[in-house]
Each structure stands twice: as structure tokens, then as C-alpha cells.
Length: 232
View 1 (cartoon, one colour):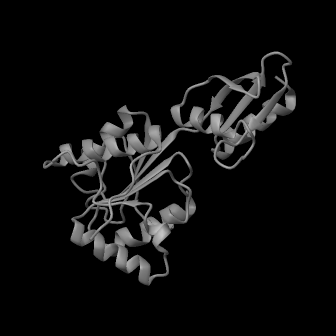
View 2 (cartoon, one colour):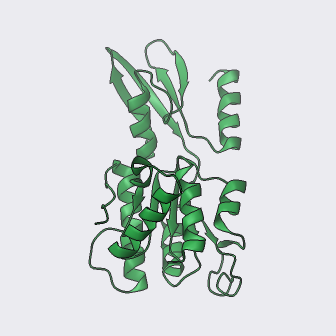
């Protein structure tokens, strides 16, 4: 590995950016690819490798390249220290996510309710401005309170996070989308929001709803599929 390549990889790690190192196996030629912004011939292979968290060979143009993935950690931002957030935060850690729970209400966001979880006692838009989501981030808004959820969704929409979800019924979600449109967000932008949140598995309890949410996040992360359901 060239020294400049190592320096670039270390810089990407410090900045929390994903990068894929591609080496042509016959010649040893190497290049670094940003899997989310580059448009080179290898970019699509690099994007899939980064999505899968899996290094391996790729055949393109009669050449064999070995792609080595350097991904930052997965990041789950939970807005609202509510009942569903408790099992969701624990499940997400088991699935390999770094988890942060954002809630200015210190009576809810406590270490007793969220042992070992990073708690941020600030309004979500402020917290996400200081530590913005990236392409390995999922943002879920769970409070049902527009004062908390709507600014968080706006911050998420301004980012390139891979998943945005919001808790609530179809009626609640329709009202949420209407408010975001009134705030200037386009139909294309708000279509990124998954609502009602989670896969439709008939979940009832907080733990079951957490399973549905994490399953949908996983589906989007690993397959790129999972079109948000439109509110009526």
C-alpha cells in the first residue's frame, strides 16, 4: 500500500467517511473510491461492497479488482426517549450500531432507562447540527410531538443518512408531511421518510415495534429497497 493511500485512509477514518480501496490484481494499480459520490466504472461495485460491509473481487472491463471496504461504524439516532426507544437501542447495539438518544427531557432520557446508551439532552436539530448524520446513519423520530420530531426530520433531510423514519399512524404521518411541505420541503425530499415506521409485521408491543423498525432499517441498508409507504 502506498504511503499516500494510507494517509488518505486514515483521514477518511478520522472524518467518519466510507472509502473503498480498489487494487487491480494483475498490475497492482490501486485507487480509492468514495462509494457514495464517485461515478467511476468501479463505483457501483464499490457502493454495493460498502452496503454489504464485504470486501471481495469485482470483474469489470476484462480486469479483476479487489475491493477492500473501510466503513465508519453504523450510527442510529433515536429522537425521543420513549418506551419503544428502550428495546430499539438495545437491539441496535447488538446489530452493530452506535446509538445515541436525543431528548431534552431529562426525566425521560436517563441512564436508569437507557443503561450504557449515549444520551444527548438537547433539541434534536441542535444535536444533529453539532454531530450530523452521514451515509451510515439512520434517524428515527419516535416522540409523536411535532416540536421534537419535525426539527429532527428537517435535520435528517438535510443530511445524506441512508434511512429516515417517523412513528405514528397514517393520519399522523399525513399531517407531518403537510407541515414539512409548508416549511418548504419538496415532495421528493419528504418521500425519503418512512412512515408509518417499520416493516408491516403486525407489531403491537414496544419490543415488537422495535423489531419492525430495525428490520426496515436493515432492509434499506443491505438491499437499498424499502420504498417509504405514502400517506393517504
